[in-house]
Length: 337
Image (cartoon, rainbow, N blue to C red; front, side, top):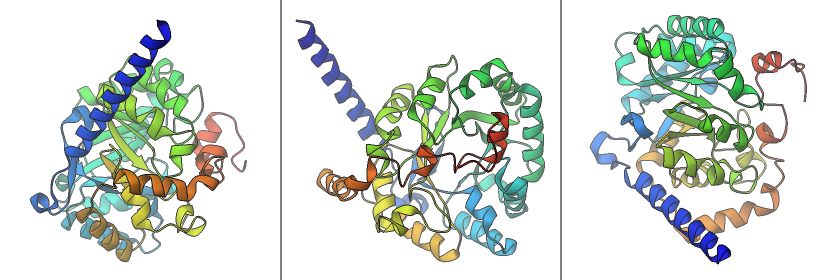
């Protein structure tokens, strides 16, 4: 009898997860409403554009005036989700974004940046630095950055990081609180099991992820059940200036991002370096249609032979993508492979 009950429970859970996923995608607003489709970010109730500006890439644009022009064009075209982090380009990414958002544009975006510390004092300093660089008095979303080491979730709670975030929220400096990570679904699940109702979780979402340390299979269903807003990243599997799914697997950006947006995420953060990339991503978002089940399976089959061992998701399988600041926190050499 037990196996039958177990199977019934499994089927019920699977159906519930599927229903939640369909509901999340069904929340997508038509492009005609705002010029850019939007989805609701979990329990926040806030609608944000289904594509977002990635802070690291915009901070890496060598011509800062061009970076500002790209951000202004993104806002004009309806992209309102702006991603950043305290440590990107040693603060340079936040600084140039702050310049772009001055002059009244701050209120047109949902501004997110990330806290790189785990303790109370360091978190408060990160917050002060980020607010100053971004030229604002509040963040829409503040996320604990790079939950990539197994003890990171414990440190956030034990060392005062969450206490700092809650105080900042009470003071009106932070609206919502979340976390990010790119390494292992287990660490995200550990954060989600902690005694706090997270507003968001940012994670790798791409076609390879389905087959290796899969966030979309392991973490997304838990987020949906807990009403945690899901923010996708690394849709091209990482790499600069071109993602590995383009350079090594030979998929197109449209194939990659259409796959991501067909999952029940709220927003996919995109690495945009040029005005041409921005225009292409805007066109993709405005014309987005979810993949059919058949098309999704065909795309997964296309990458199956290279998807199962992390060779193209190096942010999971190596330390190459672990930020220097976080390596130092855990006494790893900064130049480690």
